[in-house]
Length: 182
Image (cartoon, rainbow, N blue to C red; front, side, top):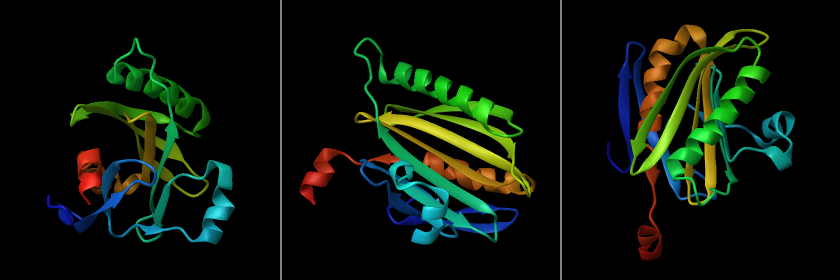
């Protein structure tokens, strides 16, 4: 993986991933170039301005979407960052299981990237038209809970999960030293 981007190959073909910085955070992630930002009209229809995620991307060809947001969070002094992530994740997992139509959990994965714990929940849900495969993820960095969801058609899950998990493996934390030198 280089600073600009890289390619993930699946049975469906090659997917180019490009680096994108998450707004109002010092975190970046590589995202598939087939995902496009929603228009202002589409954003207004789907999200009230006060609850709008930092990034909302979609693609009709793959029926795929990526949504990520960040919110301030206080980590109690008696908890490590990893413990805080575990607690926040448990709350989010319970909320998803109660609110998402047809929720069926496939599994939970946890990994460390640069001393940060990222937890992912793979699950199936239903929409009016299709069954969906989803990966919800959560991490804590510099007083922010960063969370997001990758979604696509359930029938595309095998290939797209490889692409989406590659995206999560690409999370990078931009240090203040780098920001100050630029």
